[in-house]
Image (cartoon, rainbow, N blue to C red; front, top):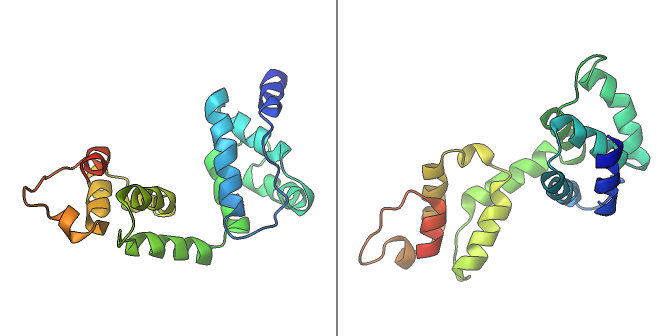
Length: 167
């Protein structure tokens, strides 16, 4: 574990103190997940490393929470930590607002690349709506401007990346 901690710290990962706007917690987790992917961390290592980055009130919250979340003998897992963390630092109201924004997302007057970036950003708040690749492609297509959604020669693509490339 010492070696992975050393490698992790060399990446200069961000710390979290529990302050900032509604998206601060999400951005913090995303940044850490980049490091976890690079280091190929196990579920348990992710929890150990993320806890190392908690400061102030967040660290206090974790000390009070970890016993009920991971009783003695239970190996910490990343998804359980994320669920508890989001419950505390990213309210269900804020998550529902983001999901609603995703469901209402339309290309409008922006470029396809800008629409795709917003689609990717907001889709993380509605993972169940895009679990199936065909659903993801359909949702993306539904948000495109009519002239792109219904071209003169229709294309019936069911793959999100291919659909984005064609649009």
